[in-house]
Length: 269
Picture 1 (cartoon, helix red, strand yellow):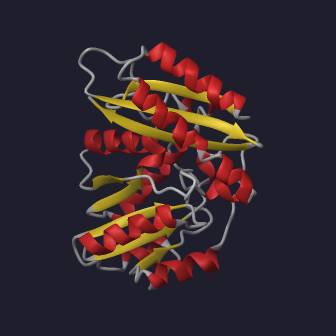
Picture 2 (tube, rainbow, N blue to C red):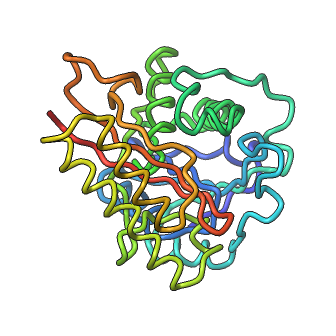
């Protein structure tokens, strides 16, 4: 695996096409690795990036303490025969014009109002610099991948945005770098987040949305979770469900022992 440490070094590489790009903030887990595996199986080459993007962290969030495991990450990528790892310069996120995305004023955008601005601004820079044929994201960050797809379509960028299924721990907890802040027992307990939204999805067949949300909220609060949001909305545009809705998103964000966890499930009608 070739490690690239500057934009100028990146510009000198002729990637074999079609090639795929997997952007990450490091501290890699099986969710990230599933994206790299998919890229290896479906594209000529794959480039992964590791960059903890300061633009997507708000005040009092965990930018300074975000887990960093570069040596381990490099080994994991080498084990998968990843072709390239891009480690941008420390000033990679400086002097950029911030992009305001669509679909960012709901769900995570309410409690993290500048988060998606920062995500989209840095992804835009990556895509224009690397020009991959495909860029891969996990569906755990459902709102994020929807925002990026919308932006790429509107700007007519020549990169296909591919969204792949959530990878889960044995308990059902969606894999996340922030899970490392929790003990083994806590992570086991947090598996009930997924059980809760699975039950909510089943309940939608027989109960009104309002009742489904109330029951799921009570369940999680009784289990010790602080609710940021729990929403049942149109998966295509994050708006309220209408008669035209053909795909429902049940999305949840909770705080458990100061750790913010998100998850979702999609229900096709």
